[in-house]
Length: 467
Image 1 (cartoon, rainbow, N blue to C red):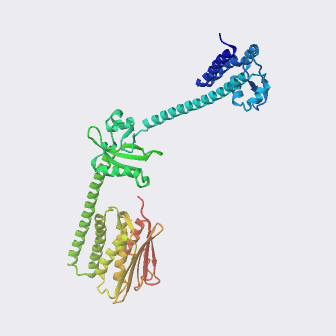
Image 2 (cartoon, rainbow, N blue to C red; image 1 turned 90 degrees about the horizontal axis):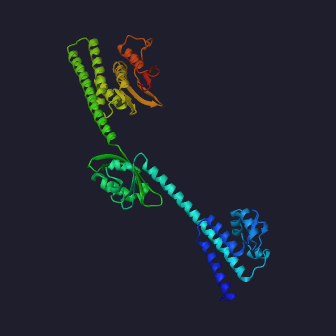
Image 3 (cartoon, one colour; image 1 turned 30 degrees about the horizontal axis):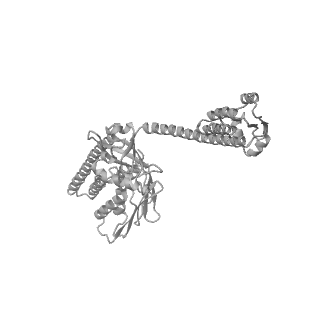
């Protein structure tokens, strides 16, 4: 037969078991429900309801099952939880309650603390579960994005192993994900000629990422040993030594580019051949005129033949420049002026000590649609100065200038000779040369100006023709 003191020990041990079992609950709802039932059994429930400002509304009685049952039905579990969480001064609470003996007080304090700890743990578990759920959702979204990027995509480890690949990479490589992920290295897909460069990039990306290009091309070898041109974008994953690589198959594009380059090269060769033949034909015309002029005794007729020959030569020189240049549509007109003026100088000037040729030229590229008429204009103006500006052994200077101001080209041909004849309108003259100058200037949508203050100065201003 147990003594009273023994019964108290057994009761206290039973109460401690009841109290400690709260700690093993993980749901706030379970803790509140279980704690309410245990509180009824152990203490008849001794807690209080509070407003949000902490004011005590009711201090519940002790061992009054009817009141307890009523209060439990009326109470909101969150108020029950709130009272324990905000139990700042347990002694004050005890003073407001009916008397308890030492054992009851100790057990009640343990109960309150146990419930507080259980609720705290439950809240941590809930937060952890919410965090895990958010992580799973985030990973799911990430995998969905990774899988549906529209390109072959893979994650590469520091040791070059492919740890993750999407279906796009399966299609590109011909291997399944199971065969690739954590089984193969990216180096197994790269042609030997590109391997050294890409290994260097892989190493540098982890030490000096700013020294590595973000995008580049390489040749990929698929499962069937097919070679594919690939454009890859590689970036480091922040906070790790991993890389994210996105690959686009540009094999078809590269093939089209190569075919286009081949076609362009063929057309370039054809165009060069055309320029070469035009130049040869013009030189044949020039040679025929030269041969024919040998049988002409009349000076006026001879001059006509020589001028026609020079015009043919000026056009031939343009086509020679074009087929010799990498640019088949434009030539350096400054260089052209230098060559043409020198040739004309040697043709017409018998005493270079008497007449000086001065050039002030910028190396400007001019389109073929402008250079042919402009070359003929230049030929006429230089020829006129050399033939008519310095009669009877007169000395002087012929100056040719070519430059550009804003978007306007400026060509000047001047001499310090006898000057342009008075009373003649250069725009309305029977001279074939000046008629050519006016007509060809109009053809290139330019303007021609004449200054006779100090010798003769013709200025041609024009802009590049837009086709």
